[in-house]
Length: 640
Image 1: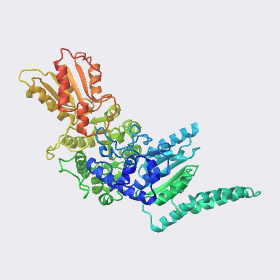
Image 2 (image 1 turned 90 degrees about the vertical axis):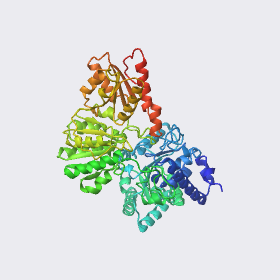
Image 3 (image 1 turned 180 degrees about the horizontal axis):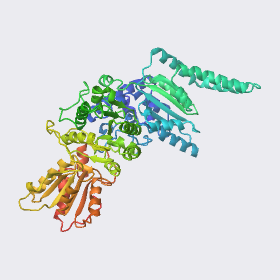
Image 4 (image 1 turned 180 degrees about the vertical axis):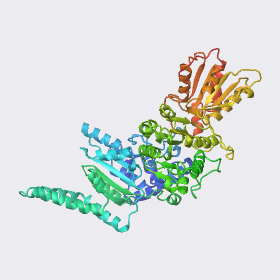
């Protein structure tokens, strides 16, 4: 039996289906999303929650002429399925396949690229202002979740949203609010009334009639308007948005497709800025996701029937080691507090919250506030730990520099997902943090080679008098023994992982590789391969990316050939710092080559595929070193 979904090649095809068929289509889309994400992994709960809303928007508006901007855009799977990408949907988040986010390079229906929260209202407002400037007629719609609305950028945009902009719609997708039946019924009745074109025409005609009454007409119009708005503000929670100049409609049931279509039809006729409040349920239609929406926010591959993750459990993850260690340290020191920006589970702080609820702070999607809040805590004698993904820490650059580093405050940044993160792609790769953290005075930056070093570094960080960033990768550790005693790190001191006594007897070293974090293991494997070919390669683990271990660098420089290896962009990365160190000491006879990520965004794909593509594998590194050592002369390079 054919599906309605197989008949949808563009949003125009939605207009051929009646409401009953659209409801069947919504179920087919949910089934397709569950089937695909169970194989590829991805954002499940949020996508299942917006299926009816997506259908209603595309049925009502005329994309791609009308612009639909998805905030974060991790909820755009249904959007992709009905905008000509159904046949490629099985390639979701795979290398060379569909992105897990909106991407204008992928489709003209994707109005704006996104991967971070709270940007949609600003972007859509800019598009609307540009349209007004050139006299266009297209509609502009921003779809933003209640979580993203906690971000300062979204609120700043809303403050501006009403100033001279027309035909601008913000859809607030609220998947947290619970509406009691009576309030929902009242809101439903009011919205049917106030979105009715006849009602609105009557109101405008009444205003024109009242204003003609001598002396008191204008006052009657104002009095009538204030009375209606006062009554409305008591019945529906839109007063906040009305005060900012938006006409508010809602809250309305986001899974009642027929009602959504009716309301959107009325809203479409509005000429002033409108905020439509839609209530949805994360994971709608898939019982495991409805029961545990947070677990299915960004889901690994799973069994569709049960929702259970596929595969066997591996070694403990870096995130789990961070969480355990932080709880252990907090148990010894009451000054330790933890801060997250709406990522308690993702950063492992849900465990801290359970153990120390009064010392846990979730500030919402507000990274800038999180950092300044931490600075205030540190100034008052606490030891705050800000747990944040590397890609999201970018949003708080000014606050780290101005509010933490300038005052040399003891704030610890637990920088999770540092390096390549895989299928989430360019908006989520954590490959820029060393560049912006390393240039900040008073900042100390560390990178562990394994989960044991992560534990040791957290002990060091919480005892250091100044800001410290510990960057560690996504996923499982190496499986090292975590029962070993904690090593007390010496400030600014690295370690020689492959010393001279392990190399060819009686021979000097041919080269040195200074490797960052998880790349230490890659460097050791590369050096072992080269040793079998007769080359002697030293491997150093700097541990501290700032400050540099000058003794270790000097030892590496004594070989005459230094290679740096990092899962980070080359510009401003660890390799750049090493090259600067060599240049400042006039080491012109030392050849320095940097291996890392070039000056380009890395697309999505598995970490294994991306590392292979970038030459960040043992064989890729060995190939680079082998070619250099085989050459008669290696010129100094500024870049990889």
